[in-house]
Image (cartoon, rainbow, N blue to C red; front, side, top):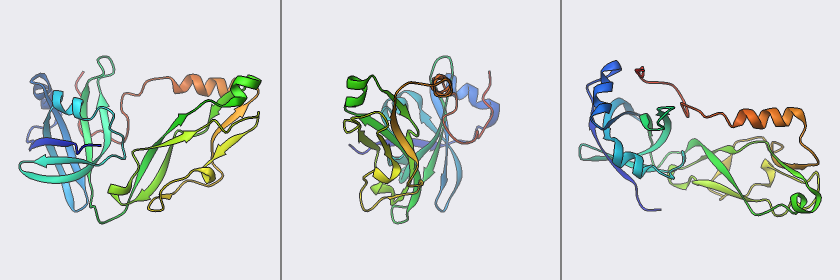
Amino acid sequence: MDKVVLHATRRTVIGKQVGALRREGKLPAVMYGHQFPPTPILLDLHTTTKALMGISSSTIITIDLEGKEHAALVREKQRNYIKGTLLHIDFQVVSLTEKIRAKVAIEFSGIAPAIKDFNGVLVTGINEIEVEALPQDLPEKLVLDISKLANIGDGIYVRDLVVSEKVEILEEPEEMVVIITGEMGEEVAEEAAGAEEPEVIERGKKEEEIPD
């Protein structure tokens, strides 16, 4: 993936007054992390939204803050729940020489024969895993091939996941990632329905109040 660079300036306006900045097409954000005090910044909403499309929480981006570049991860994104536009972003500044922990999304690929041949139901246990690695070694996502699930009861567990030797998985080895069941019970169905509800805040805490 090409290097993603966001150009930012320091921000002095905080709290409810940031609403005026948003109306001007600006995006308030904050940077914090490795030997880096919490610093409010300002980005361009349009260019930032475009640059971050398809970027995962484990992807290193570069923030050019008034001429000085910093490696960072996106730790939280707040959105307008009606329009879907970004309202605020938290960036964690990282050192490329020190390991960090991050969540990596799991993406399923292939077709499980048990679904096609036995009318099985694919039940997901987790859709992301926590790992530890140097920032530049973090995988953007983990693609999991489910075409090996041939029978009812077949599953994939954390112990079955394959990652680079530079990456350490921190989840319990016996944690279920996905399994094929014969039918979807009420409890599983309720969980699946609940998972479809949209999230307004994707991660973490709010740095400032968002006006209505």
